[in-house]
Image 1 (spheres, helix red, strand yellow):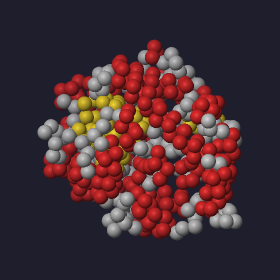
Image 2 (tube, protein in one colour):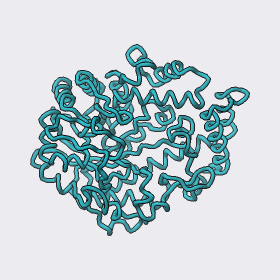
Image 3 (tube, rainbow, N blue to C red):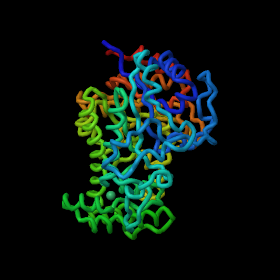
Image 4 (cartoon, helix red, strand yellow):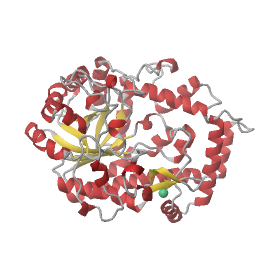
Length: 472
Ligand SMILES: [Zn+2]
């Protein structure tokens, strides 16, 4: 009966702001943390995710600094050019600018982690920051193409240069540093979810129709032109509805179904998007295992899995277990409240207009398996998080699906800001959520979202819950 895996997401800047010893001691003394997940690079925007000083924890013993005026580096390790021959993209330009440029975070943490018995994991969120096109030479060569043939902001999974960049990155990381593991995540949905739910805020036309995606479609026997036409119709229908336009004459849902029946390629293209993203995860998993078989590789699962039915259907944990040592389902109970509220609002503005927002929430709870008696009402969602039962159900769903083939580290999250505002978590709820994650069969935690947001009372609540609930 060993200790459970107790990882925490630790922003690289915090290591310098508070000092490595201070961070690690705090995490070990409060929550009994035995692994840290630290950003190797922050091409997703990282630190600059619209956070306010008031949303950060003020009880760490080192006063937090106001994030607003800080322009941080996006590169936290020292890249080695020899690993990047197969991709047009280099990290060098990212490492030239910003506060803490030139940092070598894994070298910095190696000894402090080793002497405390804390595992050192590299963490990356796939990059979708708008300014990468300004910061990184050749970035435009990786980008997706929309239904209108225009290059857009996000890179394409099927672009050989983008795929190679990820393999190069993990090769560099695992040959250059004594890492214990790796966590990678991608926080973007496919074209169908984006169009239906407005996850891309409705303004971004569906992607990707680049030459590499067209080639992949050909090998799968999917008619790319019909997929493109179908998505163009769907996008224009949803944009019209979001702008207050009239419903199709047979109604919105029937109009949507008619479009899907006429253009089944819409679904095929969404499935291809998912497979292409997971192919990049598989490549990284395999590459790391070739270099360091004992490294523990796993994935951050985008929170949308808790409410978007298409994303949930795609993220089949049983299948993902094939290329995972562990999986972190995101079960951020508190911020799930306002996030679901926004999802309901955006659904109602588009294809869900025929139902009331209350009805849409009822459908969501019923189909996702959340107990409406325990979870917030529509009016409460903005201010009240989901219950520890939500954490239990989402964790158990993952545990049952992987059936022992991968470890499940529940992503229990607290004190996560919402719309730049402080969204404080109650330690008692954090305690219960953590207990329920273990009762659901989790073999560990990835405590989330960022160390610099976590108040000590909540970290201590996690520590208490582990003592009470971990049965080995
Ligand atoms: Zn593409």
